[in-house]
Length: 98
Image (cartoon, rainbow, N blue to C red; front, side, top):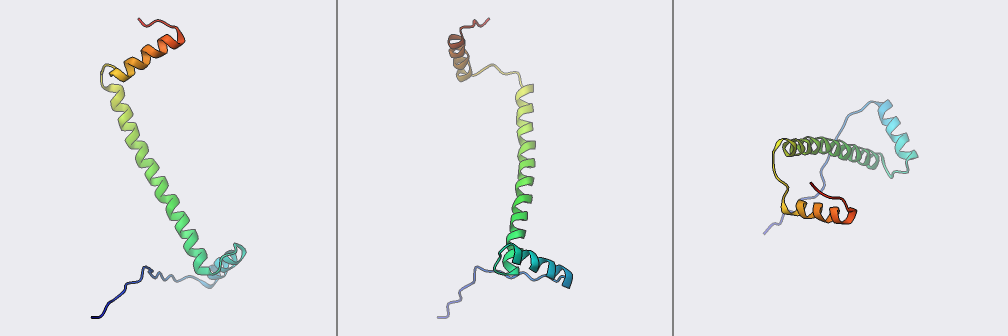
């Protein structure tokens, strides 16, 4: 039986000008990277994570705003937990509720 093992690595090729390659190689060298590939992968990965995080923050912000807005416009009475907390704070801070 032949067993085929698939590599967990993938390949990415890019064409760039000589000027771009020299610039990236210089940055990789000055940054202490082992190779141009290591530098490009690390920088691209960092930027990808930054973009994804920013997108998810915006998405969560919109979702949070919708929840907050819904809580403001709904006319609901405080639940037992909130009532108990208000009573405890009234006792602690010695103010009277009306």
